[in-house]
Length: 229
Image (cartoon, rainbow, N blue to C red; front, side, top):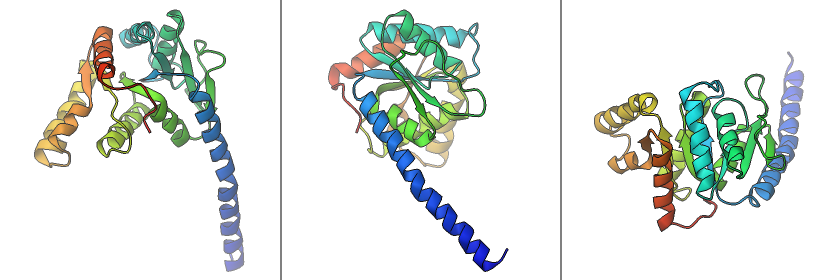
């Protein structure tokens, strides 16, 4: 490749990057406008691969139903697995059921339990994550994979660094989460001092839907329901 060809290719990339800003801006504007009309919601995260007969799928349905019965809506990533379970529970309880869908080459497709007027589509993970963080009054995190961990640790980091207001982060499933929590405490905190002792208070681990709702209700007895930034 000649220098002229190299510079031409680089300039084309810069031009494409500039035009991409308009698409990104459009996703933010649409997301902010639609999500701001929905009201207080709790996000439920977890694996897209969890089957309907799995105990954590059934538990996510139960959690979502109770969340709706306590006056919140439910937000999920809009896909199958735990996301479907969350929307299903909200739908069965007659509450707000929101899906923030992402275009992926595998796994992701809309589930049938999202309210028809509350299904949003995103091309960019980072825009979608902003919607979760801004408009969720709490994160309920079921067992999942890399995407679930990504969303969990982003929320923890934003609260830890006071970039957003604190909200409840609830890990559901002691058998799944205890190893990670122990590693954070024993390695990040005790061995390397990479976090502070009070950072351990940013998450709570539970096993039942009633425990999830107890944490949410106690938190919002003290704090107002509002967007997080």
